[in-house]
Image (cartoon, rainbow, N blue to C red; front, side, top):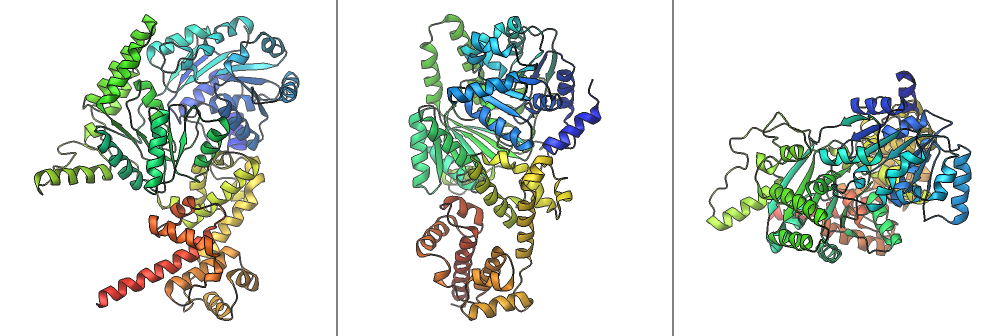
Length: 635
């Protein structure tokens, strides 16, 4: 048995984490002991670490991971490669020569993890060469897909029934985020798990806040627009029921000045991939998708998931809504449904020919419609659905228990006042106990350092053709902004920085932090000789770039000093500092989004426009607005 000290050493070395969650530790121990295992953990619970860490601890053996999505295989192998763990995938996106190279390397035991699709594993030729691979474990991801009682049954997963026959020795570990008791029993039976260790995490996601509201079509769009404006600068997923609806919503949002990307199964693979990567890289914050979007998405900082139709089941809703708040901070799950959603779901159920499947669909419909229509605690209802019985009756974090977001509360008050000619609206949580939640995401999200780090991450990810989160998670960015390390040794203690990541990106990140530190120290010229020197050089006709060179400071430091002088009115903005077409785009973005924060402006503008250019134009606009306000008061 591998001692805990060795497990924690590998965790620190590769992932940059200091400890495992209690349930993760139990699962890792079972897997390392060679036991069959069935694991149910909510989205964001850290399932992948439960088989990746044991793989890292066994250098001459391979974990075979069964995964349903090509994109997920690519992202996870890229992320493991960034940590220094050898991993590969085998799927139809590769050429024949590349597939053969992977097979040869796998037989030689060169990979700690190898990702395969379920249909490939069932092929006789795959089984032949796979028997020559030193396999330590089969890890079945999204295991609920094997059950006809599950909400995402995939026939190709049924082929995994023969896995035990062809490979009787290696243990099998099944992982899922959403499985009821009947689905869990089905997973164990279908995979032939032998007296498995079973680990079921709580289905209560404490940081999520559920709101369910029935509305008309017109009300729904108004509420959606209001909600998205309130989440400006934050990552949001909007789930729509059809491809047509995805297009309609994306077009409407664009017309309202809210940049959004679409995602659905009929898009060509390249467009889907590009849109997903742009959203993951924070280039566009809102993604509107069908149920085709989200499986395996690993973005911690999603602040809201909004459904604009009734899902087919509680499992589907729980999994999709659960993509919010994976960083542990408060996040909102909004379900805006219409009566026509129930009519449409009933219609599709009537089209099902197989009696057993029709019965299962009717049961799922009854459960989700009851969830939407009954005004009872949403958190408790979800837990009960999955077989968990909470001791509490009210959560304080859903509409039924008196909570609703500020934007919805304002809408409700406005509607009430309009209907009653000014009568007061009753408080939503009257007489009900509220549970304390963590504070909303802090100012680090929109800080100058966060902006610089995200810009660097985006550029690095593009250069390496990787999703942004593979380079650095938002959780790690948050820690960098909070701790602001000054050395490689300090950086290596930051959450998420293993040895390889520290070695690869350490110097770049320390440079950015120091650059931000110097920039933040710029003060008005009356209090700083550096500001006086910047002022003097500007008066001599030097550009910000030339000033940085003359003063021997970072370019961003010079730009920040110039912007502060412009905003204070000590110097005039020079149009030659920012090229004309860029300046016009920045001004138009400021007119739409305001000048309070730079991050929303940056994400709405072409990538060639830098934060420094935005900062200069914003400084000029703020100065002009300040003058106008002063003149208005004088009149």
